[in-house]
Image (cartoon, rainbow over all chains, first blue to last red; front, top):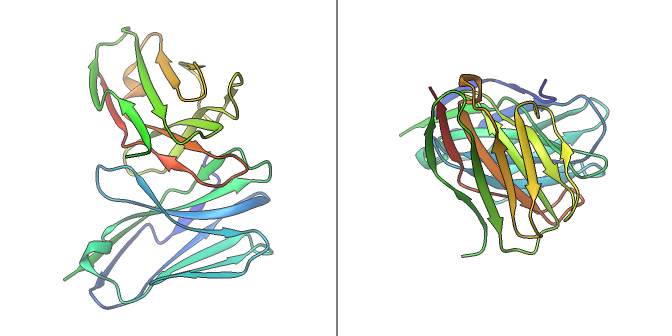
Length: 111
Length: 112
């Protein structure tokens, strides 16, 4: 079974609002990554946070990691219609040789 | 452009037929992976190759075989396709150590 669980499974917001997605994982990790997938397309890497980091920013993205709770969150600020996509939390095991995907959050940003 | 190239992009097979999905990367990455994605779900690892000459099973290896032909190429073979293997297949590569993953654009496979 997949290691990660994401919450919510679907999210619908208006353009300009912030979107927050949460993720939990089960085992120790080397790092945690977030990917975006547009409908019918491949995956695009958004941001990576190492296990010894607690927060990371990249443009409108903010990721947090709480290894004690085995959880992460992705915040997209000032959302745009172009942010409409599925977002996946992906944990990387300690050996660094295997990604495990959550089920994803389907985000819809209405113009 | 540098990246991961998968062929074919679409394929329809009859139950029991065999086929090979091809994947090639030109980034000199050590590790390569095959994932499948079923509707509304995340990706699940089928097989991976941490380095040239090695392959290992992932979460869902049954019904598949792989070959790491050289550092650039990693193929996935379905010996006797089943409807349960209808999915979108993604190849990925990475520098190793958990960093620098790049995904291909996917192969949409339908088994009827």
